[in-house]
Amino acid sequence: MKAIGYTLLGIVAAIWLIAMVVGMVAAFPYGLIGLLGFAGIGCLVIHVLAERFKNKEDDYYDKNVKQ
Image (cartoon, rainbow, N blue to C red; front, side):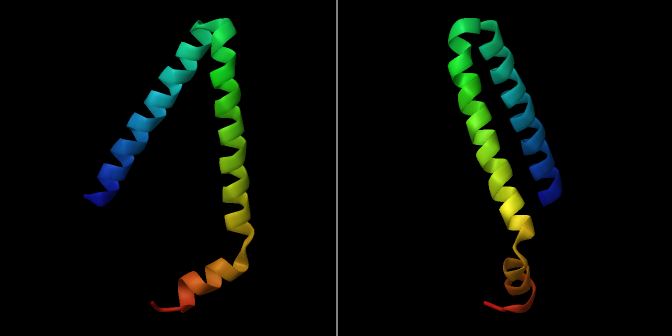
């Protein structure tokens, strides 16, 4: 049940982001500011995820340390 909820929320979030980008492209000269913001946030998210996947110490504590 939890997986279905996360899947539906992910689909809605993806559709919402696509609609925002389409709206920003439609408002061309002023929409570029928002597109630059999305690009910056996207770059930071990719950087954070890449750092997380490369960090072996976090994987060790996640699997072996009980809280």
